[in-house]
Image (cartoon, rainbow, N blue to C red; front, side, top):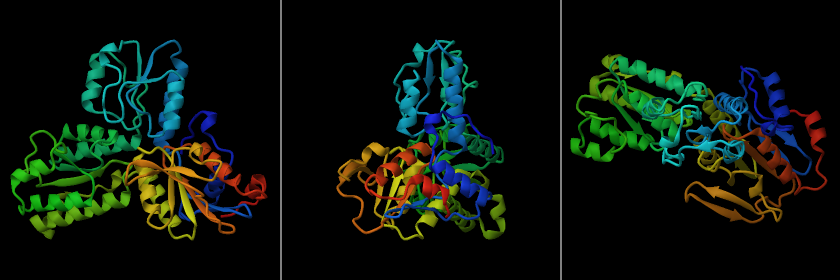
Length: 407
C-alpha cells in the first residue's frame, strides 16, 4: 500500500512499533485479536486496526502539500478536513480557513473567493451543486481535491446502478458531509433515498409493499428523497450503498433486509432483476476497525478508552460497540484525562460531556482497552497511553515493553 508523507507531529513512537510488528507477523490481517502491552502493574489491549486510514492520510498529505506550494496565497478548506479537532486546528494554524461548517452552513461567503485562491475539497467529498458553484467562480477544485477514493468508489457504483435503472438506497446519516455528497452524486443518475438504520428500512418496507398510505411516505422521508421521487415507480429495481464510515455489518444487514423485501414483492425467481449486490462498496478500513473492535469485545478488560472527534461517525460506532460490554470513555485528546485521575468524556446518548472521578479501577493490575477512529493520529494514542502510565509508578519502562513485544 502507498506510503504517505504526513507531518511528524502525527507520527507515533509507541503505537507505530506495535502496528509494524503486527503487520510483519500478519500482513494479510487474518488475525484481528488485540495486541497486549504489559507494563507490570497495568496492561493495555491495543486494537489490531485503528487510526489513520488510506483516505485520511491521502487527504492530509494533499492538504500540507497545498500549504507548501502556495505560500502567500489564501487557502481555504470547503469544510473540516476530517472529523478530528487536532488535525483541523493544526491546519487552521497553518493559515487555512474553512468556508463552511460540518452541516454546510456558510462561514465565509463564496462571493469573497477569487480565481487565484486555493480551495481544498475535504476527504468526505462534496456535492455536485457546490462543485459547480466553485467552478463557475473560476476556482480550481481538482488540484487539491482530497476526496477519499473509497467514497468515489461509492459514487461510481451509484452511477452504474443508475444507468441500469436502479433506485439508490443510501445507508448513512442524512446531515453528514459524506452522505450529502453521495446523495447529490447518486441523484444525478437515479432516484435516491437516505436511510439511517434498519428501523427506518423496516418502515420503508411497509411503504414498498403498500401497507402504509403513499402520502405518509413523503412525510416520513422528507428531506431524505431526491427530487420527484415516485414511491409507486421507483422501487422496481434497487441497490444499497453506504456512507463509508457506517458499520459494514449494519449496511450488509440493511441490504439483506431490502433483498427480502424485493423477494416479497417480486418473488425469489425474479430477484436478480430487482436487487443489485453492492458489497463491493464497503470501506476496507471501516470494516477492519469494526472487526478489530469485535475482537476486543471478546477480551476481559476493566475499561475502554476511545480517542477521536466527537462528531466522527466511525469513532462513534466503535464507542457504541465497546460500551455494550465495558465502561467506555470517549475522549477527544489526552487533555481530557486530569491529574486527579478524573476524566472528561463524551456521552453519545446525551450529546454532552461528563466528568467521571477516579475512572481507573483500583483493582491490582487493571487491563485497559485503547483504540481510536480512522481520523485520529497515532501520536494522540501515545499521549493517552503515557498519561495513564503516569498513574502507575514503578511500571515497566516503555522501551523494555516494546523490545519484548508479543501479542
